Length: 194
Image (spheres, rainbow, N blue to C red):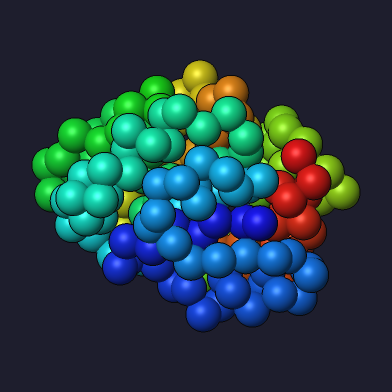
């Protein structure tokens, strides 16, 4: 069973449809025992990192995530709250990934949020098996993780940022694989097979 963590911050419908298309048995849950028993865990995210951390702490999810030894995937804000801290809400996060999340600076020709399709590059993980450099995925975000030791893929807006992160059994995607067509579906399938 795939545990999709329920903390009132995720785009569950799209993610659920993507997992169903892949034939995955999944459940939306915040139950600690179900999360610990799951074969894979996904921390989805849409919204504000400060509110996300508040909700996660109220449910005691950070303590549970640190104990999990099976693959865990954070998506968008779900990835950001797995970093050390975020400028969004000036919040301390879980500290799994060695990055401090920053806000994009709006300037001429640079819109915030970064919304739309952008190519992936510098991919270094089994998460991207069968994905070619330059393949496009879908982003919607105003905050980003800079390049760091945990970076396993990059994208640009306009400077390079971490499109994906990995530390031990923890993975994060700044983009939304569930909204990224065939490429995103392949990435989710790769995660399910890790």
